[in-house]
Length: 324
Image (cartoon, rainbow, N blue to C red; front, side):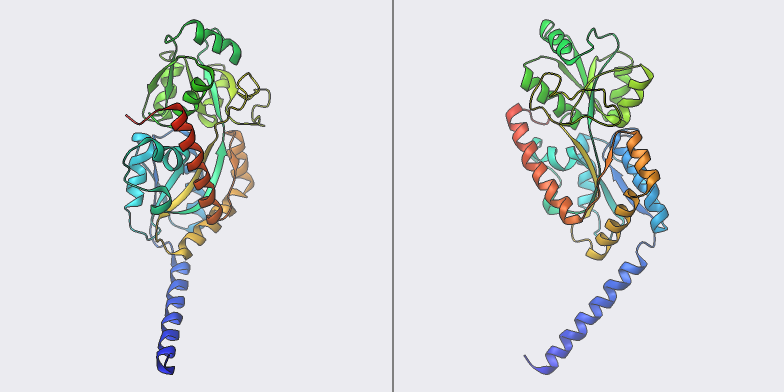
């Protein structure tokens, strides 16, 4: 290589480094759109609003929540996948959007690992198996016995076909042989009122939206979906402890950007989110919801998503469901 050519390449590299640094120092210069794939009031929405509010404080620009509910979050996923890769459109990633939908839908407007740049996981949380007080069961064994004695007579709600709440119940059905009827809604914000009104009898629902109703006595908690008990409600057994060994269903959330977003922007947002998750008031808010702050690097989040894709693909094939 000629000396002149080498000098030119060095000048280009130096110029790129300067421009990259400038992007990192000035970003963001306008409001950021935070797309949530579910209705207001659900676990994904609540989590996004906590993180979004704090990001507004850290970044000095408004983070605006944009609820785009429908098709278990696929609408939101498609919007962000097609958005400009400039750091001003973020996805409130969730288990269903990123790990479940690819196994349910024959065609999606996005590919989880190809079309997004993971920023950071935010929290993980269990779902509670809760029933309306009219249901004559206080334990999982009693509920399973009731469902087997009255096949097809109990209805369960979910936040949508193919959602995490749907898959959690279908997994329980598959492992126990019970027959309860699925009634899907557009988000937990719609599913929960129908359960409270007694129009459906049971649901697996994220802890942030179900625990307050358990504490008020409007719903009865039967079991928790994760492999271990939650500090938020330590007296409640896991599904596995209560009679279905090996059962586990975990929810997780995180922040993602369109692929090819500059790495300096990804890094700046990752740093901000990890700092936010370490703040005591944020930890207290999530703890009250039964959620556990996670954080970590963008690489770690990508690896975790990949593992979850494999896990839920196996579950969905075993259960044998497809998106309608």
